[in-house]
Length: 523
Image (cartoon, rainbow, N blue to C red; front, top):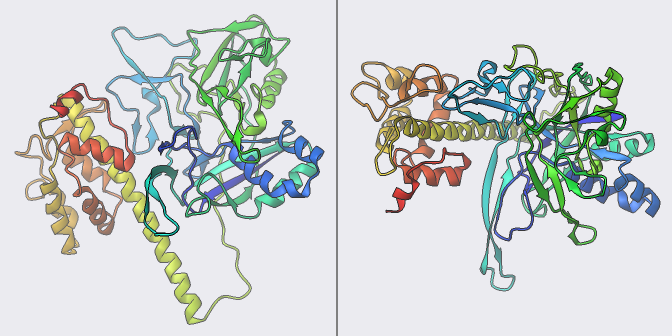
């Protein structure tokens, strides 16, 4: 039986990709099952005897699945590595996937177009309806403090990358032992702390149990078996050695076939987990990364029940740590170009409903506290929207540079002075501020006679668009207060200068296309 829950980050949480480094820690973009296992084990260990704790947390009788983000009230899963798009096209627009621009190279019907370069979808999450699941992350730099003097300790500066607060993820726990599930369900009703630096401002999460979704049904394919790795998978061969290309017999002993390397897209890595109980590192795990796609050519077809059994049993070992979660023959597997239908079995996450309380607060103090909480929630929501907008604008500058092949020594895009004109306009609380900004003849953001400022163009596969027209579209759903906060932060940099743009990308946390002339910045 599998129970599902939604997890909301109350505080930022530090989920480092590796604990081996002593300085900067890159953050995961999901919450691994091992983190949930550790938090539950810490609570239940004192009440269990040695045999029970070993069976519950170490034998695989209970599986703790990873927690992936929610987008538009749907669970988002890792984008398959077999999905590619033509170079100089962008299949993602306004957090939505343009399915017509995606080629699934794992399909037996895919034919590579002549004189065409493809780019792989290497990261990110996608819902069944094509909505992009984004995980907001931030960076915090700290230093240790001398106990006696209260001053910063020498040579103790370190940086944490973290998953920001107020984000929702969905995870699951599975076991055939009802007693174990009941004990875990009780622990999930209380707040947990996850990740690193839990004694400071990081780590708190709230968990709510939700109804389980309908399990996805594998589609029948008599010629191929497609395995979509939804989480990292650790596989070993017949001699007990790590392998990234598991044989079909390891998945289904009675099946006959072999891996098709030209249709499979496997990304690999290694993980070394720190064991808090033993205060030491466990053995290194060589894993097939989530999003990988394994395609097997079948000599004999598998029945629907065989496919269901394979999907339920998972792939590889250490599944109690959240490894080995797979989907067999998803709906997109046989499609060379994605169809308009759902990409896989849709998982809709219910929205939280506020239960009416028996006694409503009426005192001035409780009303003031309630108003402050509501104000803080609105402020946090505005900060998150501004953060996403800054990343979009930074990437727009980068696209424009790439489109016109502008070397770093030259400016490209609106300068910080031009952004300050917007700031001055918004400070005056002009109710018709959109016209003041985007009017084609009198607006501040006017493309005419500003070829490499507001008028600079780029293309995502459709017709070129100017920076001014693109910005007007992006800000269409935002109010003046949000735009004012946005401009206040942008003017701290000068995105038109490549060095400043690159510095902002590192500090704010957005990716840039690798520039062919980076070396010129150093000259």
